[in-house]
Length: 272
Image (cartoon, rainbow, N blue to C red; front, side, top):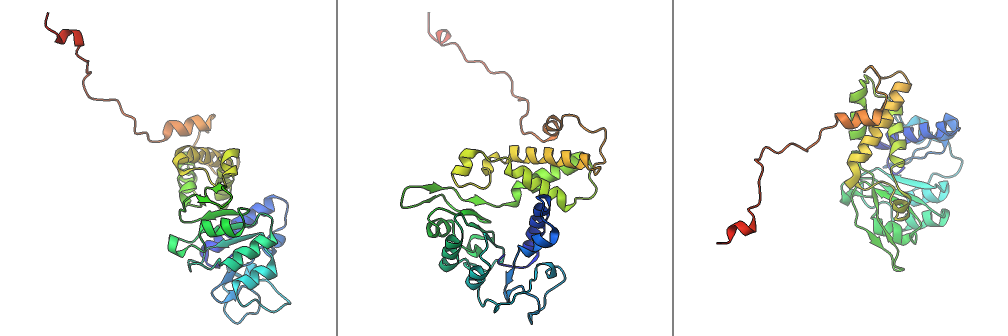
């Protein structure tokens, strides 16, 4: 991570939860995650303070502490870099090239907003990795066309994909406490919304134009999870949750109050 604040810690803890679900211990999962803030790499014993939330991601290193982010990348050799520092173009050409040399398919997430604060542009990420990276950003970027004619549609990691669906599922099921696990379930539900064609285009998120269906699918998954784990308070439990969610969402379709209109026959307008 480039950044070690609340955004980085929130994402990191969800990643740890996902790793644990896949059979890795919590300690092993945390050891795989590194953070780099304005003072440098988050390591044990550094002179700058580390708060209690950051301690779980502070590691012991035997080598000399890297002085800059590209040195940290070359030392750690990560598969993924996630930018949440809000400090601008810190995913430099050297950083992106290093990721491309370390990984066949590097994951580069430049999530800081607004666009001026993004760690790199989509064009930089795709061009410097020769189109091999998986890229997502917090700000929208235009489609990128490489010199060989390949085109990529950058994904935008926007909370609009998650919050509406989670809120809908929570309200309809009467949940009183929203655990982090609910957001992990929502994230997993979001990944199921991508088609093979969209993945081939470089998308990591479904089109925002399809946000209504995405939100409904997430709401259904959230309801399935909270009911199966005894977290819901709305009973009786809907049998067909997809149908129930669709019946409760607000629609903009209304019956028309205009009187019925009829076209005047053309033949009636001609003199006899």
